[in-house]
Image (cartoon, rainbow, N blue to C red):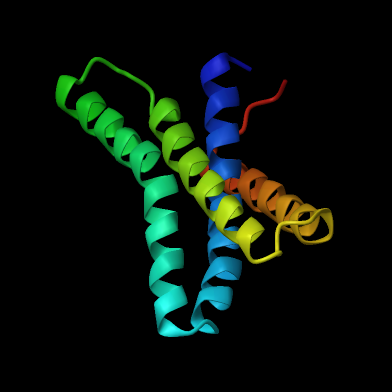
Length: 125
């Protein structure tokens, strides 16, 4: 397993965790009053926006230069930025304790591993 494969696997797991955290965060946001909802969305954009934009820029530069730059750095930036922003947002509303995070993490790792296996990107150690 090369470092690129390991970074891709980590990036996919982070994106899956961000998707599950996003569903939980969205469920909490919908129940809030409109003024609080706007504040929560602004906090998410402030926390997750810069790394996600950097990841999109890295992916765009990799596509334009065609130098064979792997997608792993962009995947890590996007997945990591969303995971960080959503986790901090859930921490504000008390939904980021171990009891809530561990099942989400287990499902994300299982979904990421399943995706890598189905896509043919999983390699033996």
